[in-house]
Image (cartoon, rainbow, N blue to C red; front, top):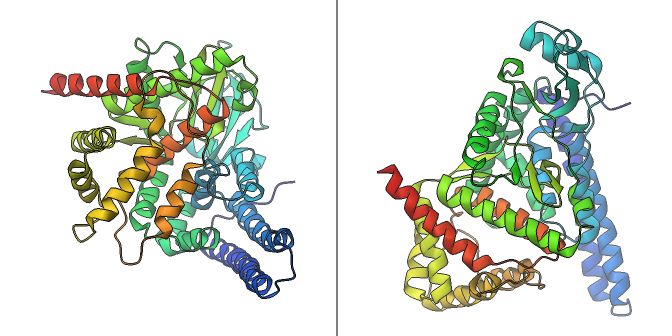
Length: 448
């Protein structure tokens, strides 16, 4: 029997507060053990590592459990963390967050009826020829049910948790709460205020299923001719409201199953995924920005996108500046690189030329697969390890956070990276990227 979803303000604050206290206690214990083990030189490195790790895992377990129960903003934050795999957090901890990619506690029958009664004045069985009450998927904002229309059409019905909008508004009314979660998991975190504001905007947009219906229709219309191998479900507007979304039932293999495909098929899917990303970013200037594995299905020759709750549009000025950034990395043009990074808010005029040079050297190495002709895999070295060494060498206090667009853009890039890496795929990064730039220039002319 699943635990009842807590939507009211005091209940969420109380549940979150208790969880944070417990998690912080575990992390304090981990830090204390680190200090003690440094003093006790007789302890082996392995024992020190295990003692500290046990406390960190306990802290993460406490937070993950609470994220799953409270859903909403906290669970969405957890899902964002989960896409990083073990690049940032140790594998033992990232595995816990991956549970949030799977089933969250489902709503009960009474709650399910209430959503349909509020939306249509009818229970689901009065709307569909058949409606399966056991959800096939559950996540941060809603759950998905299999159903059949009167004509026999099989559909997926996405149902929003009752009062989830109210719960999310409580969660994000004080962004310090979300910041505290991040600080427990990532001590020494730099200024991320702009990212938290972007998370707030994205979460509220995610709650509007009418907006998601429009996004589904937009991407399907724009993609059908150029990318027939990218399958996006049809929607049925007469069975849609702000809290219920009915769409074509799409089948396919999970990402884990796709990893068993022959290597040439994985290479094909990786190239398709990257080409489609570039088409969306450079021509449409709009991205499907929730790359968690549950939002994708696959066949050996097609990519299937299921969830368009998180979509990010970018201004022409932003995309132009981003292309300039990539060009400066390709050419190792320090003057242009410095200008764009300052414009984007990553650094300031007061930073030294040496800092910009060191940063460009690091990023040039990080981007090396994207700079070479031919087909290449992603770098085997953990990119976060490369970045960490640089970040540790600078003082982050008092710095502004970068532009908010980078939260969902980088989240999308990270999703691309993890999938292509796990497929062990080789793709033509450079040609695809340059074709994307050409698409952007053409779209600018068409918009005039």
